[in-house]
Amino acid sequence: MWKSLKSVLLVIGMLLATSVTPAHAEQMKLSCSSYNPLETMFKDVCWSGMFPMKLMGATMIPGKSGEPADRTNKIICACGGDLTKGQLPRIGFTVGFWAPAKILDVTRRPYCLPSLGGMELPFASINFLNGGANLGRSDRHEAFANWTLYSFPLIYMLRLIDDGACPPDGLTEFDLLQSSPMFPNWNDAIGRYTTFINPEMLLFTGVNAMFAMPVDGASSTLGKPLNNLFWVAGTWGNMYPITGFFGNGVGKMVDPVQFTSLTGARALSLLHRLGMLNETVGNDNLCERNTRFIIRKDAYRWQFLAPSPEVNGRLPGAPAPATTTSQVQEVNPPQRFGTCTHATGSSTAAWGMWRDVPATGEDHSYLLFQWTDCCFGITP
Image (cartoon, rainbow, N blue to C red; front, side, top):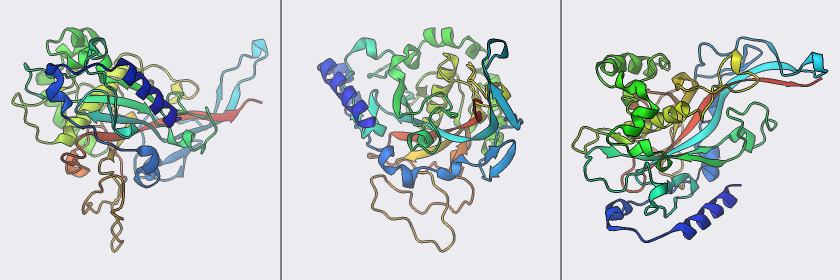
């Protein structure tokens, strides 16, 4: 699947490629990092991040990732059917777990695809394809990042669960979903498009955000982001305005991992607002996914996947991991005996402010785990 997708994208890029204009020259100097999660998933993916797994309301497999407070509490479930029409419902039992669902690449240039081996699509001079891309603006001095979202439902790709048996968003294959240059508001310096999509940002970009951030930051670092404070992303920063700009006005960044994490959170918030991502938690979402227009932060857990995979700390006395790998490995990882995923807004000091790799790993990839409640059963 991924090879055919890569080939199709490459052909499209070659057909649409044109010469790069001088305005794009500086931006085009940046190289695209190259990762390949399909080749490294068995050693780099945080498999323990899937747990705990709930079965019929009880913990079947324990874990340290926690769970949303209002996950389903049912034991058995029934979906669909209409007895008046002679249609029997699907009857089964409830299942809940953290499903590895998506990969989010946060990059320095548009149409850079690190998770497809560093492939680049030469769309930089196609204006109508770059509404939200940063192509060398001179009037902004903040940092700017682009993003690309892929579906990456590992447990279905590996056929560990029957097809269609509880995918978070109905997706069962690796595919490219969305990219920031396609959204004009992502490079919106004035606020025209952003305000139209998120009018509430006028209420949540000032003092309200200032007071909410430390509260949500502390709770997020403890693994429990506050959904009611949807306008902030914990210690990562303000969720609004939902654009790719972030900085202190002079182009300086304190923590590149914090910056790319905030970019990823804003990307999810944007896609929720546009109705492109669904709710996956609770009794109301057992049988079908309902559209959610405000991001639910505690429905996601994040793993820093590349360039330095976020992994569990080694047990005392265990040998260091092999250095022969296609990705850069973390040097002297901290000894932490929790899970290798973290909550939305969790402080990067606890899991990865050191994971940026200059020159060869400045584009970051995150694996998103979604808490997924579903009704697993058969139609009698």
